[in-house]
Amino acid sequence: MTLLFALLNGGGSTLAEEGPGADPYWIGGGILVLLLALVVGLLIFGKGREHS
Image (cartoon, rainbow, N blue to C red; front, side, top):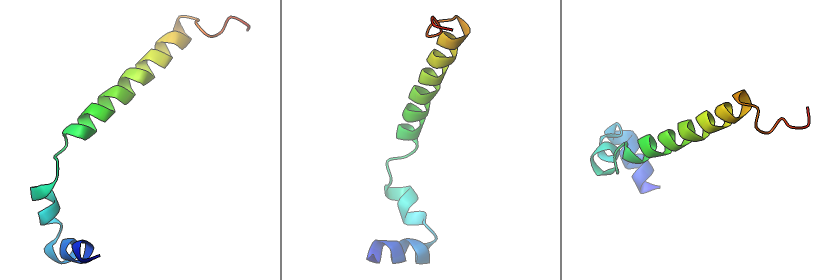
């Protein structure tokens, strides 16, 4: 709770200095884009629609 108050009073600058950075977000976003591209590719080329 004290950390929350410190971040609110400090404008959030302490979080930017101590945080891990944006790298995990880029990695996670890249994985999501890859999975989305895989699903779209499977739908375009007809895989998964054998019964229709």
